[in-house]
Amino acid sequence: MIFESHAHYDDEAFDEDRESLLISLAGHGIDRVINVGASLAGCRATLELMEKYPFVYGAMGVHPGETEELSETGIAWLREQCSRDKVVAVGEIGLDYYWKEPEEAVQKRWFERQLELAREVALPVIIHSRDAAKDTLDMMQALHAEEMGGVVHCYSYTKELAREYLNMDFYFGIGGVITFKNAKKLKEAVDYIPLEKILLETDSPYLAPEPNRGKRNSSLNLPYIAQAVAELKGVSREEVEEATSRNAERLFSKVHAS
Image 1: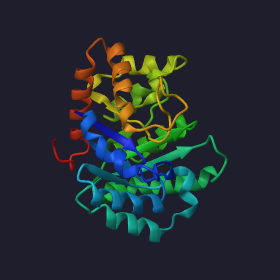
Image 2: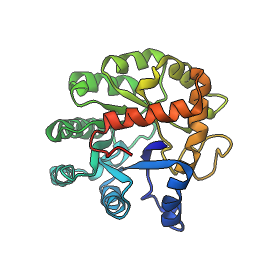
Image 3: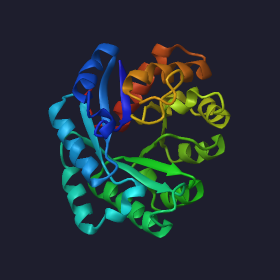
């Protein structure tokens, strides 16, 4: 069975077939899903999905691109939700300099605050970092993120930077980009990262792997990602699926074993 460690099934891209798609996952070998909050509204929708589907778990957090909406009132609400049994992480949180808004100072303020929240509630973090490699690592080291643990979602940096995250005992979320022909840097990193530190994810509805690149992504595409990792590691796809599921259970310890 496969553990989907990062999806956004609250996204409007699934409005027409969300229920039928989610119900179909078990029949395709996907037995657990973490739906990851990216905004306060997304977190509320995630809570609804958690309540409706036994195999869906949640992460509570605000994506750097949405941090202008945050306040201490919002942080207090997130803290309250983190006490729920099926909320397994704080995320996705981090820095994203690809977009110019919110300004970097705003993103950093709320990244730090949400890292502090994870420490307060004793949950691992799901890190989003795009075009912000140095600042992300610097902040995580300064705030001792290794004490909370977590995963660098949609890892896209070098194997040299991967070494720094391995020193912090972090995991790496590997998604559809690993199947792209031009993903040389990522493939070198995944070849370097031990299998016991890799999680499978789709970031649905984004970043569908080959052969479905450019289409709406879903957890049904996880076998393509597992196969690409297997080829780099010289093991079977089944070994990758089993190992990454164990890894996810270890990191997200509130998730019930399958």
